[in-house]
Length: 101
Image (cartoon, rainbow, N blue to C red; front, top):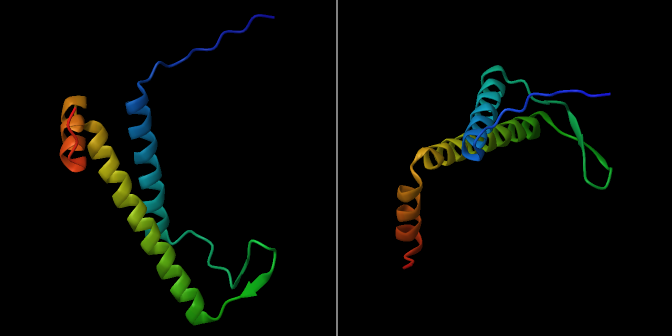
């Protein structure tokens, strides 16, 4: 049986930018709506269940929010870098690493 599927030829850079934007949008939505697990407990890597107090939950929530905001900033930085022409990225890399080619 023959089947046909259309394949979208997308540049790797364009795909990465699209995925980073999608991740940033998802994180922004989570921050705005607060739609992440705020349960009173979590399970450690060894399977131990730990119950959190109110203050621990609030600290945990703050940490998650800070981590998500940091990831958004990192994504935006990477998007900005990927949108530059290759020559500009190479020049910036050389300047940052103080490398001579």
